[in-house]
Length: 55
Image (cartoon, rainbow, N blue to C red):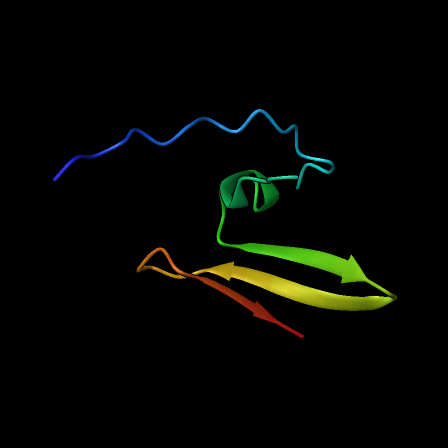
């Protein structure tokens, strides 16, 4: 059986998705408020390191 190495894509992504560090958003704490379409959401980092977003 022969294996072929995958070719690297030569296509440039049309749009880049922004990335944010949750610790930066919470400024090292466990909570951050996010406003979207005049509504406030709360981003919480749990003790287990999971993220919860609530309205």
